[in-house]
Amino acid sequence: MEKHKLENFAEIISESSNIVFFGGAGVSTESGIPDFRSPQGVFADRGELAPEEIVSHRYFLTYTDKFYEFYRERMLFPNAKPNAAHMFVAKLEKVGKLKAVVTQNIDGLHQAAGSKNVYELHGSVHRNYCMRCGKFFGLDQIVASKGVPRCDCGGVIKPDVVLYGEQLDGDVISGSVNAISKADTLVIGGTSLVVYPAASFIEFFGGKHLVIINKSQTFADDRAELTFNDKIGEVFSALDEMKII
Image 1 (cartoon, rainbow, N blue to C red):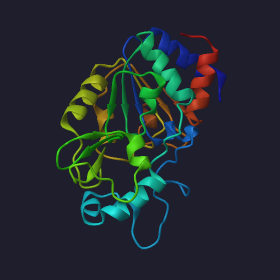
Image 2 (image 1 turned 60 degrees about the vertical axis):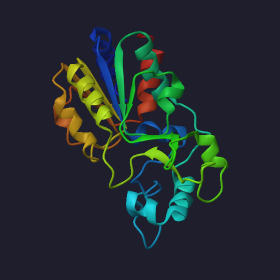
Image 3 (image 1 turned 45 degrees about the vertical axis):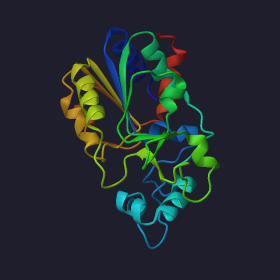
């Protein structure tokens, strides 16, 4: 990690008053949650069916038991804890520098770290609702259940996550776009910017500073003032050690 880049990043944070953090799966890998498309990721090959098919709305409705088998095995990590990236982002919000987090993750770790204004583009495993009566169920209840979880009324419980074939929540989209459009600094971390429509949201950014932290290159690297091809937790740990906030 280049020292001068960290110093430049520190200067950007110092002069910024409206930072938005836009994050993807790479933010949570250091908490032990796998990403989606790496060889060890959630969508690693399982044989006959593509994982994208298994986590589709159609598959959930048709093969609910098999959906939950995959969901519990590959997508639920109830013991995961926030890492240095989540903690530093929360600290930026606490001191008034950061105004919003826009995340593609469904793990709730930003909130666990203390972030308040979080737009969850793809929902959250911590929210689950009966499809018949709308009753709420937490993550612990889903983890403890067997087979297809059902409400007392007999209805099937569905995770409040956006499955393939479902639309993103309109209010979450508008809130995310509004926050990004008002930001003076946009920090993109842990995402290769290949998942749409989320990746297109950066087109609404017209602020001064764009910083990208991702282990691989993204299509937006040439627009960025700073790019780090490092683990995001390591970058934010280094910034935290500099005592810039």
